[in-house]
Each structure stands twice: as C-alpha cells, then as structure tokens.
Image 1 (tube, rainbow, N blue to C red):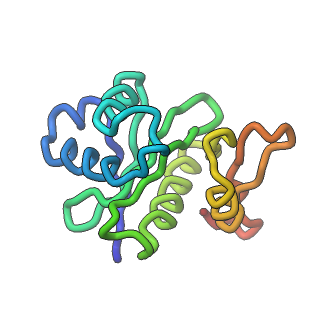
Image 2: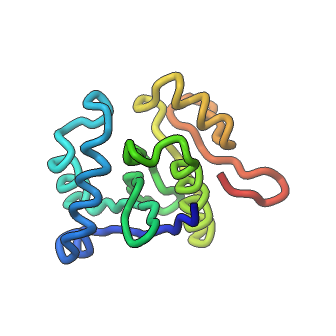
Length: 150
C-alpha cells in the first residue's frame, strides 16, 4: 500500500472539506478512552492550539493520523489512529516512518509523552525504535546506527 505523508494545519482543515471529513472519520474510529474529547472537538481544539496532524494518504484519502505539537527540538506525537477498515496493513507503522523522516529533515526528534501510552503502545513503540527517557516522562525515537527511521 503506497502511503504518503500529508500534513494538515488549521488552514488546510478549514479550506478542504474532504480533509476535514477524512480526519473526522479517522478519529471517530478511535476508542473513546483514547481521546480527551469527542473526535471533532479534539481535532478542532488541536488545530486551534497551533498543532498539526501528520496523515497517511492513499488514493487521495486520509487513512491514518497522528497529532503533532512542535517545539524547537522535538515533534511531540499523540493519538495516532488508523481507520478501522485499513488497520493491520502497516499504515500506522508507515505513517510513523514518514513522520520520522520529515522530523529528521527539520533537525527534530520524535517524542511521545509516556502518560498517554498503554502498555501495548509502549511495546509497539519499543519495537519501532522508541526508547524511554531516563526520567520516564516520554519515549523518544532513536534511529538505528545505520540511519533508519521508525
């Protein structure tokens, strides 16, 4: 499945009805306990807080997304979700790889706050190359010495 990265900011979301619909569908598929707000409220609040979404795009549709907040040294990821109809096909792993490549081009690292992760999430992230920080507050992607991405 040839998935590409598509970044969505507030302007893109407001101007493109299909993008808004796709994001809404992605997060509507998230388990209720995963999001702090109902899906559409979560999307709107994240974008109004100057966040973006990095999305997996296939055939002009968004299939998965991860919320991103940027600071000078890192992209903080939260709430990755893939549409139910496309789960277990590598979309989430491919999305994280593409996000890792984009962050690397900007000289940033990827981090995910530990408090938001279930044990299953932590196991998956460890398998993808994320390691807990010494203080345990977050997981950070640590690419292999050969220069790979998540």
